[in-house]
Length: 240
Length: 338
Image 1 (cartoon, one colour):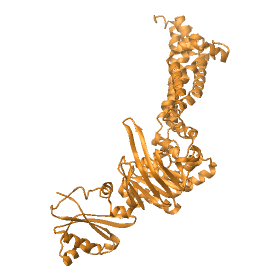
Image 2 (tube, rainbow over the protein chains, first blue to last red; image 1 turned 180 degrees about the vertical axis):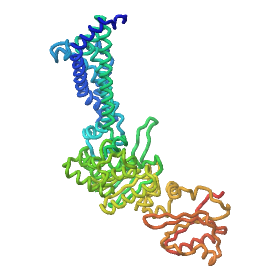
Image 3 (tube, each protein chain N blue to C red; image 1 turned 135 degrees about the vertical axis):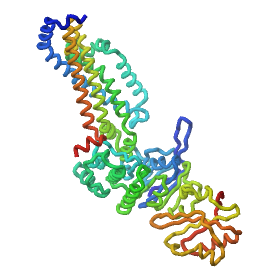
Image 4 (cartoon, rainbow over the protein chains, first blue to last red; image 1 turned 120 degrees about the horizontal axis):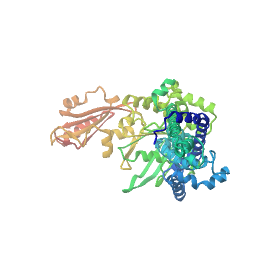
């Protein structure tokens, strides 16, 4: 099926599409991913904190039914396949954006899909914080809020960055899927030209660009996480 | 003054109830260095956590300077914890903050202005002997240095009481000594009451004035360190004072021999050939089965286990002869003979 992908005609055609469509698509993919991740963190981070501190052994135990409901909602949202979720949240998208199609509209389902994921990632990061440090803070007279802001979150910054990097690459993948409901970006080009019009070369190039984007995000995220981690002796020693 | 009355703590575990503390009563005078010693699982850590209400006792009270900690609200308790600070076996420094910011942590919590907090932290770095480590991160420090930073942090709020939970157990002997030296120095200079939780008799011997021995959640013995060391009554105390094993273990000798334990304060008894004189003056030949000398609170203490082959009279005569010297105590003891 790919036999006609590399003919001279196909190449010229592909080059034309790349020249005219790719810069915008790349930008769309980029900002949709960044914005969706940012909103997912804004909702998911406090939720993840709540999951840890509100637990029955946590620093500020919350009523059990409340925690059960939150856990249930997160699990439900995480179980719905993204393709279905996009359609299910149409009413919400229309409420917030005013329309259900287009690049901006695709941010809403992305956030809804990603924030429960981010909440779970944050939860696992915060649970890794040494409980002795929490005991120390309590023995020093810290309030639960101070423990969250000065111990739990700062101590897990390197692993939070690592996990947010995982989140951003996952959201990047989802954003490509949103091409199906009219979201813009590299995904849309891959589907529209590659799948619907059999221009496989364009599809390959769109996928290659997605791969490069993931590589860039991952490399930057890992570097940043290592740079912020003061537990690594060699890294901090260089600075002094 | 810390007054602990009839303190009990019961944990509900998967295997049923676990009584960690049983009717513990202690009073710790101001300015003291008070040791609480016991084997693993004796309830030491639970007891020290009841002193700042990190653990709520099941029954009984803890009063610090007349304030009943159990009756305080969460907010009042947090205030009180500025007066009762704690250092830990694992140091518990915040790994993502540098040393200066670690020391500033308690001041940040109480909302002291940054510049003032920084100045206070620098002063404390000086006191603990690490003025050049302000910008270093905990991962770059040795265990002893980390504990010094933790001590500085515990002192920022000018506490009345410093709780040390196995503070030297993760350190090598030399570092342990230097940390104990620092704690003693702080106790002297700042007049802070220090409560030392440990499983090492050597720690109690080197810095504590008073000691309580905890066994199975109960205080089995308490008093001045000299007193407890010279006359350990309970089995737990004996095990701690003579970890190498004096009584309870085997000593080479005869079944019909009598054993006398002699405890002496080296400062008085040193230089007198007591055992040689015993033989010359009384005609009693004593054999040394065991001997050891320890420094406690700056005084040299020794213990000797003598074996005497003779009758009850010889034993009595020996004890009378030895105890007429000041600073020497002797008593007959039962020993397992091999």
